[in-house]
Image 1 (cartoon, rainbow, N blue to C red):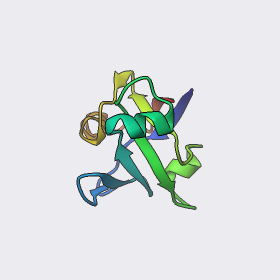
Image 2 (image 1 turned 180 degrees about the horizontal axis):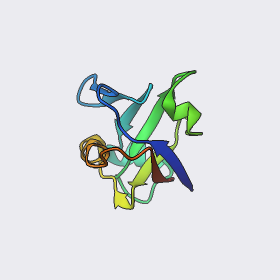
Image 3 (image 1 turned 90 degrees about the horizontal axis):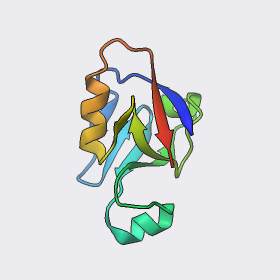
Length: 102
């Protein structure tokens, strides 16, 4: 599935702990371990799961849902939260970014 999301803006990404982070008005988590791989039905342990979507969040406005897993952003694979952040920060002034979900 290809869904455009808004490019990262300053202060829209906040780490809560090693496992979760605030992102575009929702909460995300890196996929870790076989149990999470199984829960999301993934072929491997890469990607970032959306674990909550705020009512007025940019995630929701972009059509993303809880339990969606970001696997590719701007044609680049997402391994974990760190790789997602690096890609989003490299986008500069882009208004929308294509993503692939699982």
